[in-house]
Length: 353
Image (tube, rainbow, N blue to C red; front, top):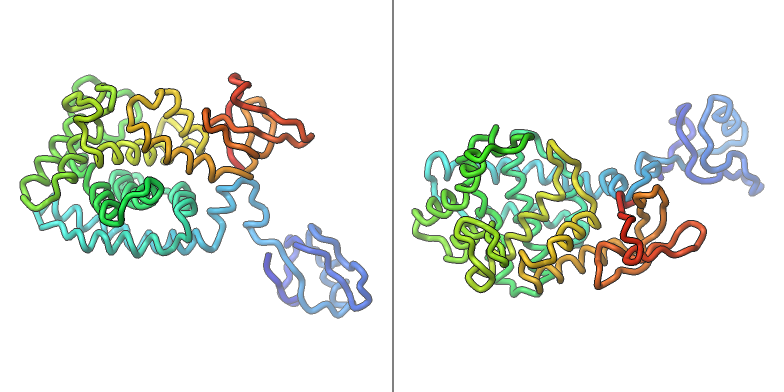
């Protein structure tokens, strides 16, 4: 809502509150569309200012409200300032073998995160970012670094380990910059040969960083092992649980989470409950159980109080998170009935408001 001088009113604007005269009488009701006749009426009543709705007041979903907020606009403008700084630092290293200045990368990180008051809000802001088609790989890595700070805090890591995790996130996918863009972001199913090429990004990135001789072993391991899975189903070496570096396990979660919150040519970005459901459907066996459980509990808890639309078209409010099935909360409907989604397996949450 904003307050507008009567002289600046224009037909089509909508009142955000009742307009009252000196006798405490309602002259124009809230939610009334302004017309020339109404402007004349306000002038006769000597009304000087009028509360008017802004775009954010018309938003219906939570994420629409976030995107229209001043906080997001500030975040977006700051992100766009520092994104090319990050991109140039990485590309100079890849194309010219310029030493990677990790202090400068961390400065990029710090200048962006100060625009979000909480980790939950930072994730909401990133969810609303729309990278250019040619910048998707770089945006994926920068976003992963920003997410790493949030997840590291949720996991209770020390400040030293959080900073190391952020460093890992900045660099773990650097090998993808050597893969042709048309293959990396191909909308159709990759051929076997193309998939093998994409899989090589882990070893390409590892060998590239190792050649500098200055990177922490955890960074090298995260780059090589972030597609390994605890059940042995990953690549490049099909390692199992204890054989995988713990920072690589964290990056595996960050990598998949960032991918699911970003749009792809074959699907829209997923909402938080859909993301949680994807991890639950895999039985948590692919990821470090304690880490993934803690992160998903935080994500689910951040959705309390939000309205959701179910797959049957009904709309309700999330009032309780089911710790045994985080993607299936207790939802209170408009008629005050309750739906326990853990007992209604045929239903799913398709959008969050």
